[in-house]
Length: 138
Image (cartoon, rainbow, N blue to C red; front, side, top):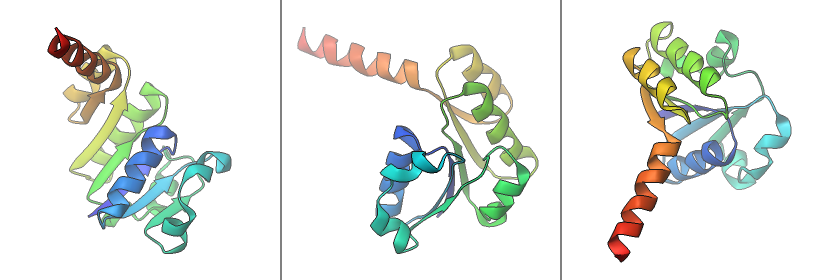
């Protein structure tokens, strides 16, 4: 599978490493060069993970990431609005069927879900998991 991830913070980096280790082709778009320092050099040097230093919300960066051949697009920056805009652009302009985003705000999740973007709410996931752990201990 060919996957594009915008953002190489903790989530983007971790996801890129895991998907690459499973044999998928991963391209990270990240404008902050220092933010990509946590990516494993071995996977980058071998071409398993490709890094593009650019603004991932722009069409030019998406084209440079070979979006025409991508099957999955994931916006995982720290900004809900940027993630939603970027994933929606990938879906509507470039026709990516599996456009996904990560948000912290439930209202943002509802909005992007209504636009056809698969949205994960980090806060809800953490809250649900903690609740489950706490209720199992009781």
